[in-house]
Amino acid sequence: MLENVLSRKNASIKTKITVKTLLSVGLIALAVVLPQIVHLALGQPGGVQLLPMYLPVLIGGCLLGWRWALAVGALSPVVSYLLTSMMGEAMPALPRLPFMIAELAVFALVSGLFSKKIYQNGLWAFPAVILAQLAGRAVFLGLVAIFQSVTPFTVEMIWSQILTGWVGLAIQAVIVPLLIIGLRAILVNDHD
Image (cartoon, rainbow, N blue to C red; front, top):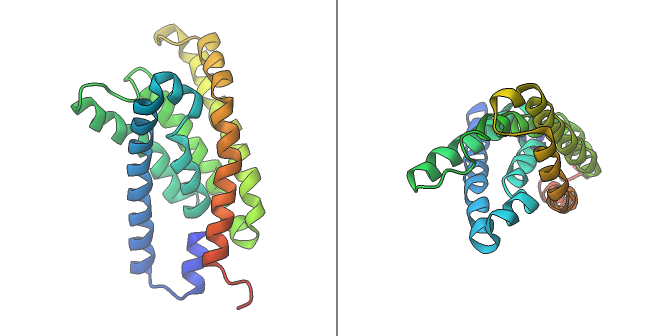
């Protein structure tokens, strides 16, 4: 969506790259900070239930398109892991990290594929988010099924976590599209 907005405003390539870079860095920072806040307030079960790292990645997909969002999705868990490791408690834990990188990359890719449609009509944010969530969770579960012999995770364990996280997914399936629709209303003047 943002690419279309910037093109409509005749922004230079340098401006487009600067805006997308700043937004990407901000979303990655939010993906690191939000889980810390949720874990402080609600503990580890709150993180499993609300899935706070997913929120900025889904926003990034809808706004940035799949290329830039893919970087946000893949880098968010890596940056979080590196920074929180230095503070003594890695989030996500190292065994979960590769699975989350894949899952969030899929979240970003799928929601990002809808970016141009969202620019045309903000209601496309709803299927973008829901399909991204379904695809990302399926990839996580599928990878665990494939690699369960060499990972501490089982399909049953991850399925249980998916069921626990449905509340967070449901909240995000409403909040993210409404936020994107609101931003679209501000950034896109349909009467031009």
